[in-house]
Image (cartoon, one colour):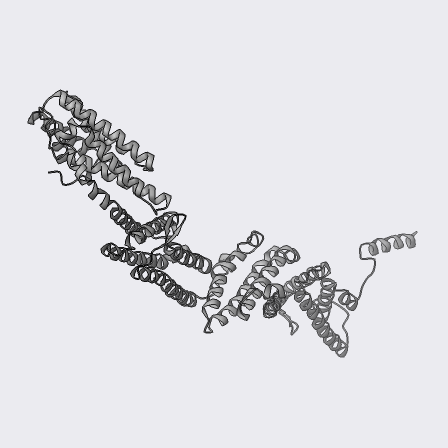
Length: 603
C-alpha cells in the first residue's frame, strides 16, 4: 500500500514539470535561454555557498566554478545573438528574444540578491546584463544605419550619393522603429521602455551621420536635401501615428545642433535670395529693353500680353515653396516677400519711365499689357496673404494700387481731355435748359468706350469702372462750382429731375459697357433729392443720410451743394451743416465708399 502511494506521488511530481527535463546544454541549444539561465543561477547558488550542500573537495568545486564561468559566457553569447536578431521579421527570433529578455531580468534579480549578501560573490557579479543589452542594441542600430541602402529603383531617382545615403538611413530608421513598435515591444516588460530606447539609439546614430555630412562643404542641392530631412522628413517620420503611441519624439530633440542648422539655413536662404533676385531682375530688364527698342507687346486673343507677372510670380512662388519644403516653416519666407516688395518698387519706376516717355509709339500698348500684370500681382498677394508679413503685404498692395491707378489714369486722361468741352456745360443754365448738352457728353463717352481695345476682360471692366467713377466725380464737381442759381421750387425740381435722369442714363451706359460701379447712380440720386426738397427738416435729414452713406462728405461740399438752392437762408444752411457735423462727431463709421474726397477744385 505504501509503495503504491509513493508511486502516485512521484507521478504527480513529475507531471508538474515539463515532459522532458533538459540539461543546460540542451536548453542552450534549443534557445530556451531563460531556463538555461535559471539553471546557471541554481548552480551559482550551490557553488558559492548560499545553499547548504554536502561539502565538496576544493579541486572539484574549482572545476565546477570554471565550468560555470564558461557556461555563462555561452549563455551571454546566445543572449547577445538573440538581441542582435531582434529586428528579424520571423516569429522564431521573437520567441528567442522573449526568452533572452527573461534571462536578462533573472540576471538583474540575481545581481540585486548578491548586493544584499555579505559573503564573497562570484567575480562576474554584478553582471549588469541590462546595461550590456543596451550596448548590444546600440551596436546593432549603428550597424543597421551604416549598412542602410535603398532599392536600386529608388536610389536611381536621387541626384547624389549623399542624398542616397541620407534617404537610405532615414528609410531604415523608419522601418526598424515600426518593427520595434509592432513586434519587439511585446517581448519586453513595459518598465524597460524598449521603444524609447530604440528611438534614442536610432536618433543618435542618424544624428551622428547627419552631423558628419553637414560638416562637409555641401553644394546647394545637397544642402537643401539635408535641411529638408532635418526640418521636415525626419519630424514627419516621428509623427507617424504608430510610432507616437510608443515613442516620445519630443524627448529625442533635433537632428543637428541649433548652431549648425542656423549656419546651413543661412547658406540656403542666401542662395535663394540671390537666385530669385537675379531671375526677377532679368525679367524686368528684358521688359524695359523691349520698350526702349520700340517693341510692341504680343497680341493674344486681341489683348496685349506681357509675360512679366507670370514669370516673376512663378520664380517667387517656387522660392516660397522651396523654403517651406526645405525648412518646414512659412515664417522664414519673409526674405522672399521682401524681394517681391523691392521688385515691385523697381517695376513701378519702370512704369513711371514709360509714362514719361509717352511719345514712344509703343508706350500705350506697354501700359495696357502691364495693367494685366499689375492685376496678377495684386491677386497673387491677396491669395497668398499668409506668406507675407502684414507690413510687407500692405506695402506691396499699396505699390500695385498706385501702379493700377497711374495706368488707368494714363488711359482715361485723353478721354477726359476730349470730353472737356462737354464737361464745361454741366451745372450751367445751358445744361438745365437744353437736353442735348448731356446727350453730347453721353455720345462722347460711348464713342470712347467703344474705342478701348487691347485690354483683357477684367482690365477692360476695371478701366470702365474707373472711367465711370471719374466722370461721376467730374459731374458732381461741375455742379458744386455753382454756375447756376436755382432761385425757386420750380427750378430746383427741374434741376433735380435732370440730375436724377443724368445719373440713371450715365449708370446705364457704363454698366452695359462693363462697369461694376452701379452704386455711383446713388450719388446723383441723393443730390437730386436734396435739390428737390423744400422743407428744411427734410433737407436736413437727407444731408445727414448722404453724410452717413459717404463719410468723406465735407463741410465745404455741403455748403456748395446747398448754395445751389439760393432761396435757402444762411441760418438754415448753418443749421443743416451743424446737424451733419454733430452726427459725424458722434459716429466713427468709415465703412462707406470713398467718393467726395475725390471731388476737388470746385471753389
